[in-house]
Length: 244
Image (tube, rainbow, N blue to C red; front, side, top):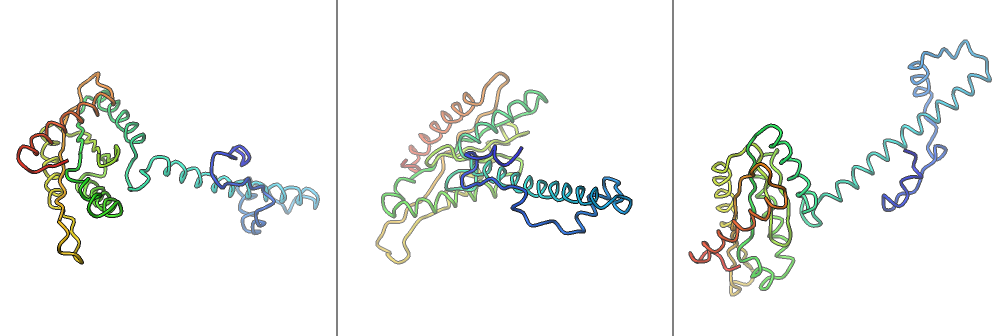
């Protein structure tokens, strides 16, 4: 696709014409002409000049195309990633859930989803401010990524809510993983070392685990995991572990 068609699609992008690129070196010219099987030594001067001009245009367009592909890949990455964290945003996460559901349905493999909601997170924002809250969210994203497989899908569903999709994982396997994730997050504590009088806040996680059933869509699976999370949060509140 020519550069002009991308105007308005990639912020800050200006169309680049072939003449804007520096002339390719003679080595690149020769390589291209050799690849085409053209022996310029047998051509008259006029034909040789025309072919060299054409090869320059081809090489410039190739460089332009590579730049456009890189810009498009960057734009797609920005569209998929959360604004704060290096994980999927909700839109991209739901798309990946639909993809995993299609694969599980086709190959009849297990698929589970963990819905993670932080406990006591509001207290961090109230006591220490939103910068501290952002730092906590970044730590949570790191924990979720470090303690799951590369094939698993991690996304931020909104606020202090996260989702983890475990492909080829049974319900029992996913329950054990949820316990591990909760234990790692439960160990986090926010405190102000410069102000010992400020109350420390223990972070925690309530995790709802569900297994996909044939015929169930992505939205229904996420909603079911959300309900399972609320049940777990109620249990933790009753045990004195969760406030919010």
